[in-house]
Image (cartoon, rainbow, N blue to C red; front, side, top):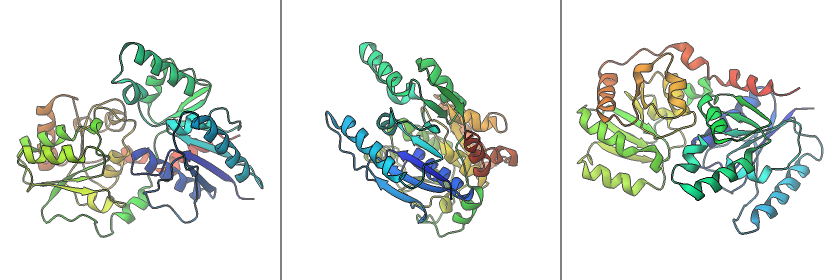
Length: 356
């Protein structure tokens, strides 16, 4: 009988953790596992392989809804296991982890994709911060946790969460599939050479920092920004304020950004914090140099050993500007061993090692 894996995730909307979950699902398929995915919210933006079964909880938030939907989710999983049990259940993101709390399965792991102290506590002080920390401990205490970077694992310890187990397993990248997708026709075209950003248009991504460094660099290349989010209007206003309307293009969400990234001179990441920014690994695997802020926690784990010159201090706009200019004019070589650490066949074996 074919082995089975279930993934539970908030949604399959246009985010990094969602893409990582699909990459991991694909890696399990290559190991001849059948994969089911339950989304808490009925949102599926990414293309999903036809052989992956998608189910939705159709969650609607209300005062008592976490209790009600938790019971519904647990029943749904029981029904899906009617004929054969899952060999592993992998839970992604905080809402899903809350809803799965209390579900009994011998091989259930909860993946933490971001530094919780930054994502959940950065704007809280005093009593509000204390209560949020208590809530995080209530969610994650006693669970089997996989952190996608060492920085996230350390952050979990610093918050005072006491998991049943804590392991670090990096995000997987399907290098072969990336190369194939990179050969397709780009969904956003540019007549000039360009640099690129890929990701959600969110406040923590600090597009203002990237735009200012780009303007100061004076490079002739255009700047393509791929992604959607709540900061789109703010970014549009910033582009206008900097007089960059003719040089910066907002491409929106792209189901296949790799065909665009492949032709870029450089990919930039300007975030205040990350988990393990897979977009850096993907760009490097396509032979595209990167420049990233040295934010907590993932960029240094990706670049620090092999390409430290591609990291810039978090709030040093001059260093960011210089790095953009230098990387475009003198592209660095990309060590093969840097990318190979994150190959999907390597990462999925780490997950399989959690099985008996």
